[in-house]
Length: 136
Image (tube, rainbow, N blue to C red; front, side, top):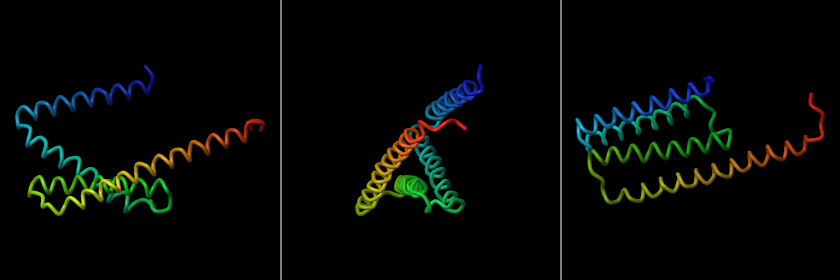
C-alpha cells in the first residue's frame, strides 16, 4: 500500500471513530448539550486559527492571505456570536451584524474563485508560453 493510501485510510478511520464518538455522546448527553459542545469546539478552532494567522503571518501582503483572513475571521465571528447567543439569547438588532458577516463570507468566497481562476489562467499561460523551450 502506498504512503498516500495509508494516510487516506488513517483519516477515514479517524473520521469514522469521531462520528462514532459523536453518536455515543449524542445518545448519552442529549442533542442540546452535544450541539453546544460542538459549537464551542468549532468556534474555538476558527477563532484560534484567526488569531494565530493574524499574529504569525504577513497575510495582508497577498490576495490569498487577505482572503483567508476575511473568510476565516468572518466564520469565527459568526460562530462566536452564535455560541454567545445560544447561551445568553439573541437580541433582534443583531440580525444586521449577522447579515454583514454573511455578506463578508460571500465576498470572500467569490473572491477566492477569482483568485483560483487567475492562478489557473496564469499557469496555463506560462505552460503555453514555455511549450517550445527545451527542458533544462
